Image (tube, rainbow, N blue to C red; front, side, top):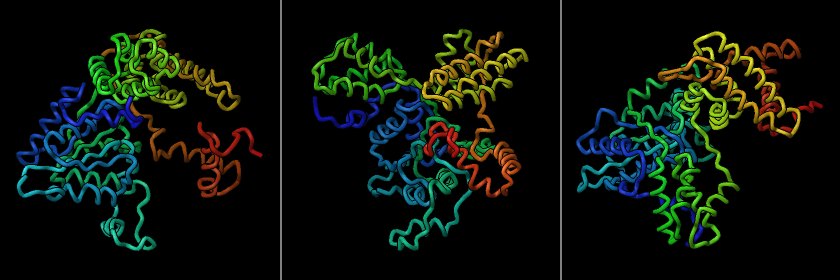
Length: 434
């Protein structure tokens, strides 16, 4: 076996001919990029939406490389406030290609911004003075204006999409993360959708997984049998990146061949956490008629048990069509909530696990009427960032109990209580208030 560098990077496709899966989506991206050769198209940006590991950004980079275009990429590890986006992307996108060559008039620079669903904050813009001061290269660090976090990032992103003269591709896993969690998320969605075209990616097919596995193993000069490939693909949810990582782990000991036994041993030692995106996962859960399927779906949805309970509690009244089903669901959710209390009482978290199962049942088998057509589960308003209704009620109640001022409760007591009762508390034993 060769060195132990990351196989996902070593075997990342550099040409469209090496890509697998999402053929229709790739054709749309290729056509859109081709349209840029004839001027600025109507949609100056596209948004790629889909689960992680299916090749969203890889597709964009590979096609751009085939076309001989340059790529500027920003991801979640980069600073993405207004100044950072302006400096890295907007300036290049609103002028000629950063790498302009008069002999290559049709050569573009692709602006690729990944994980935009993790771009926090609202649409409030930052003044031009603050942005310009923050991006001054030679500014005295002690005097330079610092923009914290993602300040002004979404507003600058909208400016980029509106003014760009270069193709822009955004990518995300969960589109609601980009729209935001405030009550005006629909307005944010409309402002973005006026400026871009959305392309939804799907999980890789079994054939795509097989082809990638064979190609990687052949490149690494590792022999395999058909049963090993089938075992790999049958235990993969359609995640190409995870497939390549699995292969690297299985072959890490320097073996020259793999068989089904080696694959199954790895699967048993490290069972994959197959997570399902919340909106399609909930839609499938509500249509489930069997307890076994509902339990599996409830566990696989990419939400912690406490979050899943809140999502189902919020959506049951709008999705169920009869009061009896809602009542049965509420009783099940009450039991699920009781199960969650184990996380505050002991270190045996079986009841915490059962909570997801009961919540799954509360969204499926409690309803005796089949649900048909497309379902539209919604994001719980009380979970959205900036939701103030529940917070205000808690502050008022704590003010009455403690006799402290509202500002003291809001700024000093409430943050401590939230931290104490979070699922990943870092401030000590939640039962010990001494």
